[in-house]
Image (cartoon, rainbow, N blue to C red; front, side, top):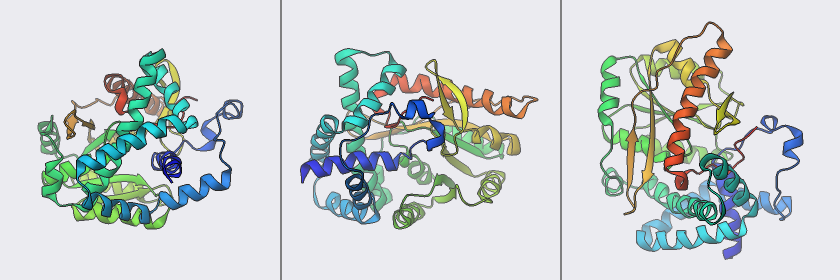
Length: 335
């Protein structure tokens, strides 16, 4: 049972973090990627079973029954076991962190193990947020840094694009800003299971957070622009776009970032604010907002997207190096 739970944790991480589309990785490199020794049908069964609205609802019941300290201790143990057993995810994360941080040997191993433990501890906290009240959410949040930057951006009246990556508890950022009375919209891809997608949309709605799903709706981009022109706050993950994105240099290697922030700025003049929500030693989470990243014009559309995506990638590279143990990108970053 415990071994199956760990395998499901690895599969859940892969689904939740929305892997690169197949075409983003050349065949020669894709063939070199490690594969799980478990049969494909078993991997699919565990993923469909655990990464579902059923599992999230029942995890929520568990976190409502057991004290948070107990849940964190259990999550830590599962995180250590996941690191030991999930070879493919461990090797991928280790390689990502090696390139990003320059760590080697025992230090790299310790950092990689910490990402597993921190990620697994974050999951029940996210679910606790989803089923709780504003007061319960506040109990897990430290004071935010940089809320004045959001207020200054909204004072401009042209909308705010909050950009973040798979760094820290990104799902909690929208809740925190909604608690400040801000009109928050989260842009996301659809979840693998419709029931799970509805579950996420509904819990965000309880906090006053709107969801715009991209990928299949051709009018989604128009809806995002409309939201920004109404001076809304739109939150977007930028570090692993499903449509392939545009090539950038990340730690001297080629990766892909989303061009969406630059395109939204071009159409609306919105402020582009980087943000992340990081766990603190005491177990609380703090939202960090940083000064705007200035977008720049370019005569060539492709260069415009690449140049501004690179500016964003440069910022997040520095941020990841400061907090590598909270970088939860369990898929290969490099092209």
